[in-house]
Image (cartoon, rainbow, N blue to C red; front, side, top):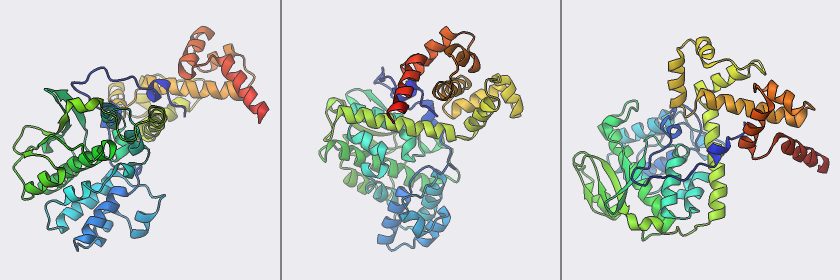
Length: 375
């Protein structure tokens, strides 16, 4: 499925006082197998070094040692959550999340991590991290704010999370993990000098409070209203160690494509897409699709929004895919293609196709013909 240009080439953020993830990153299906088992592998490594049995943790995640070492294995966020829950119950140390997070480096995240490393500035790295957060197998919505001379990552309090079986110890693990990962990856991006200015945590100080300050190399304040990891805002303009504008743009495009694949794999999105493609050339209205799926159109719109898309976006993508297919594989005129994909006239179709691909239908067809001839 082609990636809409407006998705692949996301506009720069216009506000720096509250940088939040797009809706697509907020709706995480914990059951989808999409991520390499990297975090689980690191968790097992820390447990093994501490003399904690790892077999129950693997069993909780429904995995075995062979799956963990297999490059083709894909796991879900729910599997990591199950592994973490089992590990917290078995491990006597309260700083387990901190230990695991400090071992998760930018290279653990594949294309997502590479996009952070190649960013043009620390600010762009922060924005990239938010935009493609779903690629990180994160279970917390994150955003950052810049105010009063500091740039701060904000992580949710326990009552703001709706994760299954989230008790106090498991939340402690997850929040420590989040702080440690962010601090570690930022140092990977910028260099060892780039340590947080301060950390603020909600809740009382845990038994390992001193370890948090020591491992993350900054003062920590407990009992705060929000969880925040702060850096001097003046550092936002500094360039990462491996900054490369061209590579950053290329990798960002790849991340956008991966994120788009996530959207198409989402449950309801896939079902609506199937309804739209059931009869080529006939595109049912959202009300009819909702009726076929046994829900109201309002519910359908709301659930699609939660998956980071909408009926209109799906319809546009289906039309785009069909138009490209017809122009590439048939001799239909542009006017006939326009009618077949649901446009009332060829003018509107030409404008839409130029918006989708950057080319007119005829230009696209000529390029495809030339490519086939050269092959």
